[in-house]
Length: 248
Image (spheres, rainbow, N blue to C red):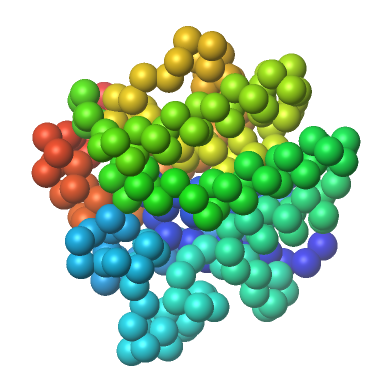
């Protein structure tokens, strides 16, 4: 088995780092997690950032970030015996191919294509929600009222979940835990953080997803991950508490 090293940002905040971490953990992969701490993190949704990316990468930053294990200045990157795979969904695809017994994609060809479609929709869409509802596993903002654009994204996500569960019969989006669930878990955490109510028919899915072993391991690990003041400060600006869900 090749040596795997996942260079990622803090798993307390970085949804893109959470997704492959969950998939690799669920697959039982032996991998090293290297948490990179950056000095120049800019929150997606910051008015100064019009790129749509988590961070706008300047040429002067690229060399430094490559030295920290990135390929194109962003994270995560999975290093496989020294060969890099960047982009979260590509890392998840690698895990599905190397650990086929975990069935990270559905066996049925049509269901597999549907799972890839909704995973790609998450990877490329929902910019309003991602900008307004920054991912924060520990913080809470009570009774946040999302913008119209963000509410439209939220409604579409609930529609995706409902359709997938109806087609598969559950208990998770395509039966058992898979890449699609890992792609949408950080969205569920956003709903928890900002007090977005989950519709009653989807509550059982939310409960079961949060109870998955890989998810519980992630939540435990997040408690010891480095803090990023830009995300904590954003919650405070909204009247929230970045430490609300810390154990007593």
